[in-house]
Length: 389
Image (cartoon, rainbow, N blue to C red; front, side, top):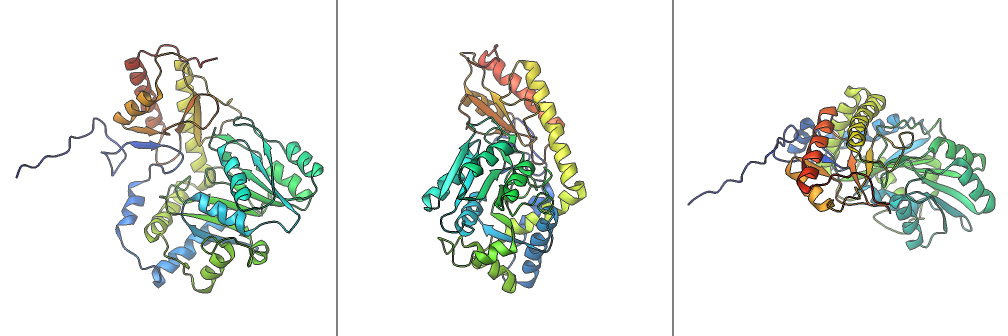
């Protein structure tokens, strides 16, 4: 029988998966070879060794979030949105009270959509997709509607990459005895966050973002008194944050089958995060990545959606060229052929594309992706990088 081998790709990808492209997306992202190797063993979900892994993860996440003994960490199977719905469905305000969602992109809109679907009272500040909310915006909303008791804010809104001032907003919320809830999905582990200092009551994030694990679970770091008050409040059996916490506390086990491989790989990712220098060092590397990418794209004539003082180091949004020869699908496919997978599509109202600057990538990768962009655009005969009016 004749055997047909797959042709080798025309690029060299990340260490350990050289036949695959770098993932320049906001998660899933490129992970280290050692995180991948951690996936090769099978673990029993109820074994004492695995329960020790889960405890280590919960403890380390609370430590990274700047928590004291009044906080708990609850791990939830599934993507970040699973933990968001578990949080919003379990920690609802008292009757006749509302949740204020501070939205400036698709992920704030999604939180409001979840609350609406659950029949929970919600109101929204809508800042579009490229403007940061201010503490004054939240203060005005709470002053105008005294029913607002909980406030939901995105730390880094990956629709555009903008970083929102959660510390300033929290001061306003806590001055009115509100509950401050932060979606730190795309920021935790790279941008500073101190829940005690900033009086944040709830923080939600995911395994496959700045700590550089793989997809499979998300987690909620939350004040214990809010968890205790959530008993019987959830709309769901599976997404009941209180019951999930009580199960983990009782015997260190999940109520339902956990993503064992993802959790063990995440413990390795936590070790590597600490070895790199923690949040400050991880954020500094991402910032270097972003600065190299943005500087070189601007030199080509591209314009960014956000100004330098607005964009964070997580994902960069580039306005699409107005040149009639520009075709995003050709750009996407051409970059993938050269070893770089960028985010496939836009979320902003203006035509744009996004490139993630997180994961196991460095400045050399960023320089190489700009060279690849130049090659693809040259092949398309795109000469004018200025965005369409």
